[in-house]
Image (cartoon, rainbow, N blue to C red):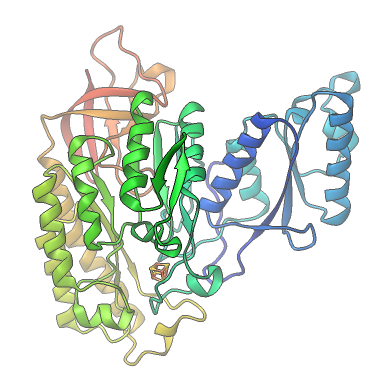
Length: 464
Ligand code: SF4
């Protein structure tokens, strides 16, 4: 399969549900965890019954005859009960009589068959048969879809749900209040991902800063040691786990609560990437109040200034909404000033669009569609100017770049990202062909590169 663009379901559509049957040894279990993590990071829900699922994934075992029979029976059950089945795991790689694929011979109506360690292919099959959900206000990926996560980076979901009630958002009504995953489970999953070759771990949730609030920051255990279920402990330990693998840890969806200041010195030390994805949505206190957002614009400005003092190389990414109901021209101008003053490195902006069931739909003075779009465009012009100025200051610097694509071992160049670029949502580093004949570029490996130019949102660099 070569299509790497996932279709999305429209905002407001029911969350697609996937049933999962996991058979086999601990290695197969790790594969199941990787697939489930990816499903969850992309917003799919899981279903405990065949009937409640939109499709079913069966992770099989092909080791001994009993296991083969158990796996084939499980596929048969899933087909009978649900009808839409994707098969992965060891049995998927087995040949049947005459050299064809055994699973396809026994169950010709399955949607797709892959072998083990095939998160990428399984997700591709899921996207093809069950479009991924999309929420323009909370997705980490652009509305046109997501490229499948290659093996060298992975999303790590640390919690589900949210305790806030932002008026434009229906996530809490769909997914409920914040439920933090046990810290031991999160850290174990992180180490497995690094062991499997992941070079960049992207921490995601609806509200990363609130991690552990629901369990009163209770003490859990990992590697025989007590560790608290709270952001600082999580980030520090993730950084320590990543170090021997030389891997990056990147934080998404960090709200600017005061305790986030504790994380920034860990970034200055190099334990985790000096990159914060902070979804601010607006700057004007009255708009933030109508949105029911947790912090005021003025404090956010101070907070960002403090982060830059503690860690001058920090990159701040954020998303904003233009044309929220009742937004006046003065309030919008406040937002433009904020982006200029806070020097937001990477900014995305949505024109407000009502989500079915959101409280904000009932607010007074909705902004006309055309004006929302116009403001979004004005916002992006300012944000791009700030971003371009900041990018230009990098020309001449040597940066570490994680290679995402390098056809022919990079002899004709490639594409990568620096610490300042999260996959899919930020710019990239366009790598020129290396001058040294012996130098090669490999996907999933780091290279040093000298920044020689900028190109829109991107940097141009020469591998050294
Ligand atoms: S913080 Fe607000 S926008 Fe984010 S999930 Fe919670 S309610 Fe929705």
